[in-house]
Image 1 (cartoon, rainbow, N blue to C red):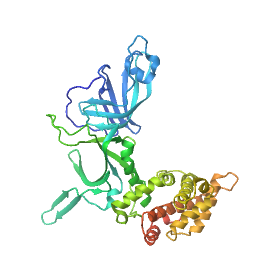
Image 2: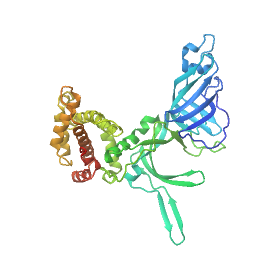
Image 3: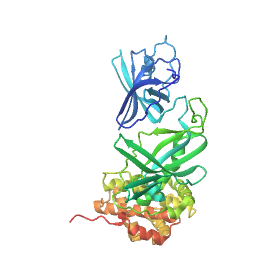
Length: 443
């Protein structure tokens, strides 16, 4: 179905629990019109597309080539991009795929799922790539120490004055910036919420993939995860495309336009740590140059750091699972240090046993750990080999938990040292870190 000439301008949103009935646009004038249902829930964003028989064009999206009769014209495949519109506005669905259908061979319906939704797009814009993206990273504003909202209460008059103003952006490099800002949301007529936010923004002069543009955002999120060992989230909020400028009703362009993006895999309501969790790596230690240094370090040691960072997002599992996640990261870290710093070949480094790799990590860390490093290296080697090899005794749950805890602290300390944080500062901060408290058996 082709795109209509005009759309009504009304509220347009897609929170979880939404169910909207409207029309489908696949940007092909030769396909028949169809009414569909757009839904968003815990499973994701999906369209339910009906059809009237096995010869219906839309049935071929779900039932394959066998639904097509030779005498029918060749139908195009299901597009990866399609647009939904109703009285509330338009929703452009990106990176679509078909999964699941029901039919009695007379009528049927199938489900189309989308990786992203871009709100308010009115034209055939290729939003599978973009020139810019903005995200929000939990904990980032606190880490930067910036405020965009000020409060002043006059006790004599009883007047509360709230001032919201965006401060200057922090330019990390030519492609990445951190933009302090604020936003207002209203819940009916009863409450108004003014929120401090920091947009993490990346740009590209040529349209680039979302994964590429979001890479530095998730890298910065990973730094905050290691810094205070909290499961921070990175939620994409907006996207900008050079072919989709801001226009007035007379079609005059007025600069770039940032569209609201819905990523069904994101959960912006991540729970924050109870109490105060101080950072091991503070923004004042790094500044913009230090962030660039971290992004480079993360790329260089990604094979080692990814399993350990990912472990923070694993919950409700036993100590063996945590050890199986962190152990390979430690093996890789020792291996990569031997390659990058000691000049060993891949073959030479691969021959080194786990204990030698842990000892090599300790050489970099020195006395910056709040526990005995040699004891950790020996105990971690025994514990990790204990879960890997069936012919060895399985360590106790308590032993595994404490070796896992110490291993994460060791990696966090190593990262902080590589980023230039002083050893004495690392030791002091780790001693106050909740993760430094050993697990103990219940009395």
